[in-house]
Image (cartoon, rainbow, N blue to C red):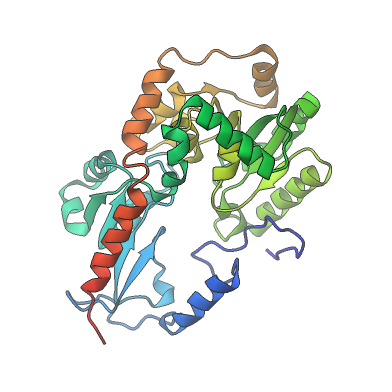
Length: 351
């Protein structure tokens, strides 16, 4: 899909991909530095022990077409959850492709072992580091209510959102069960009838704009979103991280995306469109279900906003469970991952 020149919020690249576009010159320069590594893989694709030529730090499974075959693969979490997508065993594939796997919590390690058995111990070294992405929420999560209100106020100011407007953040996964592919922009249109009392921010998973989704689907979703943006119904958050939108939000509407876990860590009210069959892990499904109120469509959602909702009685206990399973090591995760990377690099074969 071609990037529109004036679409400043457009997310244009997400690996694996046949082409490469860059957010800034620094990203491009870094890619050019290692460009010679991206070639057709030779036949001897499996590196021998202790002969790694470089470390590849990745948030997704390495693509063999890139020819990066003599490296030490270090996997870092790209989302806060696990077991929340029945579409594939992608998490397990990432684990099997890694030499060192940085996990979101010790419980994720148990999930991997339960899923693939004793082979788990032979595939990769699992290290529970926590999710580095969540470190950015540390001040909010550990702060007093006054501190949280201050952070929220500053973020709304940065986004030019009036202090008296409630912020509704809609987050969408990229799969067919995701909000945008299932409902299009109908939820924005329904919520916009609430008028100036609310500000709607629509988020979208980066995979919506890549070869994970058909070009036709990407096209109509993007044009629909731009239409809602241009008529003033919603602002868009189409990048990799929705941290700013989450911090500003008063209510989060979502699906199976791991954004749900990040919103729960921030103790945001959640309205979810979920289906048990979309989850590989029943424990994760129970958490999503019990920290939220579920809705089936736009009418159901509007009834919740008009008449109010009552959250499950065990929501507080489930929020504690979220912190235990997915909020592991918040504030220190990035440091631990950095140490793992630096220690690994120091042991690489020198030229």
